[in-house]
Amino acid sequence: MPATPDEHRAGFSASAHTDVVRVQQLAKVTSDLAAAETIYAVIEAAVNHTADAIRAAVTTLMLRGGDDLVLVGGSGLRPGVSAQWHRFSVEDSNPASEAARLARPILVNDRADMEKRYCSFTESVPEGRSVVCLPLGVGTQPVGVAGLTFDNGWLPGRAELDLLTTFADACGQAIRRIRAGQEAAERTRQLKFLADASAELASSLDYRSTLAKVASLCVPVLADWCAVDIVEHDAVTTLAVAHTDPAKVAWAWELQRQYPPDPDSATGAPNVIRTGVSELYEEINDEMLVAGARDEEHLRLARELHLRSAIVVPLNVHDRTLGAITLIRAETDRRYGPADLAIAEDLGQRAAMAIDNAQLHSQTRDVARQLQLAVLPDRLDDIPGWTVAAHYEPGGRAEIGGDFYDAVPLPDGRIAVFVGDVMGHGVPAAAAMAQLRSSVRAFVSVDPGPAAVIERLDTMFTMLQIPQLVSIVYGVIDRSRGQVTLANAGHYPPFVVRASGAVEAAEGTPRRLLGADPDDCTETDFAFADGDTLLLVTDGLFERRGENVDVGLARVRDAAPALAGPDLAAGLASVVASVYGADGDDDVTALAVRAS
Image (tube, rainbow, N blue to C red; front, side, top):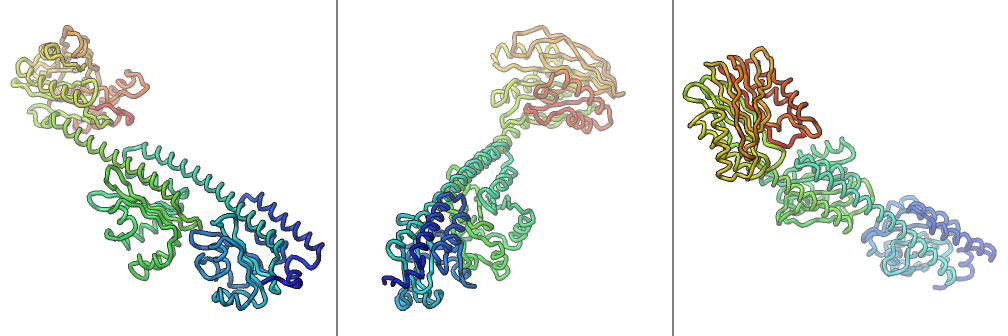
């Protein structure tokens, strides 16, 4: 209904001069809105400054969140009103909800009309007051509503309503601008997070510890809580729970211990793992908590978490679901939306690929290790008259290595020993390694002399055109003569560790690698008494990146006295531990032989 002259005076002013002042004040508010950089600055200008400018009895600002309006600021509100109208649906029967639905101003000053249209709302408005609700922003999707009430049933005229609408539009534009900036900053943070997470996922093949680190990275960039569940041995295991407060993490683990997840649950991580389909919960309400609670205590604990919004995404790769990542917002008012879901699904895909790669690498490495161990000797501890200790460790790759070694007892009580290294990795190196080891054993049965064995190997390489290059050191220890006879084809010299602990490098006349042009082979004899130990190694034991080989060999010499002790296996383990560098990626082989 149109406003009377008296009602007009109850609004903006009681004089033309005051009207001008009020218009200027409202223009200043609009200017402040244009300069506002935070939502709080918008609330201050739209609520407190506007109330002063237009002499409203009550001024409120409500922002839209999904299908709800949320009261974010108010001036002149009676006690209890803020709590009652903190959050309500845009489908409710009240002027603010109608302004949001219809995207146009709603003006009411007729008590009978108000009771007819908004019966549940009428009790919130004192007798004699009018209500003006202005949608914030131009278009069909206002970002919120400004609510005003005036004494004496005053309603704005056309000019005044145009001015108020201009103010509301400016308010809506300021909120959209600030939110756009916040969303852009949030997307930047999320993209940086994805880059950091990708780097973390690529840094290690230990996917369990890596995913735990990624869960920690999610907090607080993507979530207040993050949990990672994976499928292992046909069962779902919670791999990580992350929160900024370690005490809350411990509490969450205890809660899960008391109330383990139901694998048949129709929602959450179990369901996502079964279906491979993401779940987005923009708003977690109490009904959902009640539905998911096992008992009253479980419900009480769930309510204490103050869960507000959640995302559960699968770890999908190659038509398999390896697990799920759960993100929860509990300590912020921000709700998850489709854009957040897209980021989370991107993270899930990257994490799934990392798990798949790690599992594939582990399986390949296990197969390679088993294949290699199948062609390496396994009965070195049962050679009469001799104590033999060996250490073999595949390199840091999943590929099969080329190191080989053996100790072969001879009928006359002597023992033939050798260590070799096929250059390269993979199936060709493994095939050459297996061929060489079996060939050496065959040649030993014909003539175990070092020179004879090396020369036959040269002949075999020439006849079969074996493409690999191979280094080998081969020796025969004769206890009765107290000597060891060695022949070396491109390998680093072995060491003789005396019973006293003195260490000598068994340097001989060098010759070319097997697979290079055939070369004369010269045998070299070294004294070898009871109590002495012969140590043969491959370069994977002592070589380190950026270090001179002589430095590595010196480390072997310095550690070798440990072999003079009574326990040869323990002594060899000590040598390996002292010499081997953790950054090595080559096979490591060490063989120690002593007369028993």
